[in-house]
Amino acid sequence: MGMPWVRLDTGFPHHEKVVQMVADHGDRGRAAGFVYCCALAYCQMHGTDGIVRRAALPFVHGRPRDAALLVEAGLWEPHPAGWTVRNFTGRQPTAEVAEQQLADKRAAARKGNCVRWHRPGCDCWKRDLEVV
Image (tube, rainbow, N blue to C red; front, top):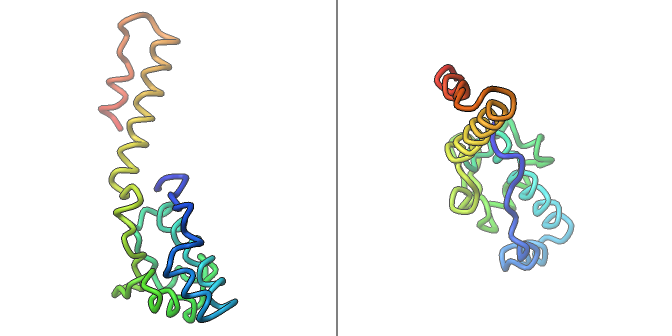
């Protein structure tokens, strides 16, 4: 499982691609912008590194026409399985990095519990890491 959060640039609503998409397509462009944001969250939650599979489109509240607008705007790129969020891995932690961060947090929690509840120098938390 990926990170519980996603990075969204505060300038996203003013990005030239988004502004142009809304200017050209009105409410359809606004809807596609929402789909883009939902796709960021979906990709990060599921560790897809920016790949939005065709079957996942309804789960990001999108329709094929939204995907087509996002491709036209240059925010998504076609992918054999569906689409890729452009520059996703340059702006979000990759699935590998996210998993390592979660593993580091788990190890720190085990160490903290060992120090708190066991005798000094117990180091049982290190054995627990070997099993995981």
